[in-house]
Amino acid sequence: MDALFKLAEERIQQAIENGELDNLPGQGKPLADDDCRQVPPELRMAYRVLKNNGLMPQEMELRREILHLEKLLAKCRQDTESGLQAQALQKKLLEKHLQFNIMMDKRRMRR
Image (cartoon, rainbow, N blue to C red):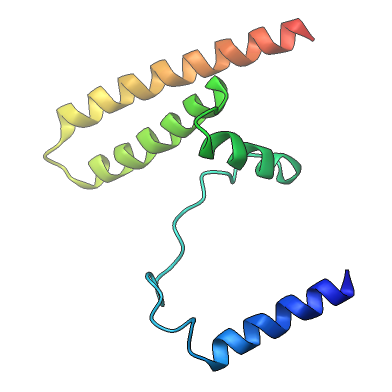
């Protein structure tokens, strides 16, 4: 494994010296938020593989939707003129939470 690590490190250094890593898209910008932060570290790789192949479990998809709605709701609350929109988002968020909790309860009962 050390030889492989050393080879990879040499190739990276060579690419840096040749300028192959300059002017890459997104250079100097923060990385996109990772929606895996609620997934336990030992399951993140499997989660990403499933997600990238469109096979994400339903509860994970619901969790992603909940996070998205929470972000939208936080933005709405900052804007005082979007009260009706915030109410609609709050209702949708509560529905998603309910769906998620029911799904997780069913899963626990099966065990």
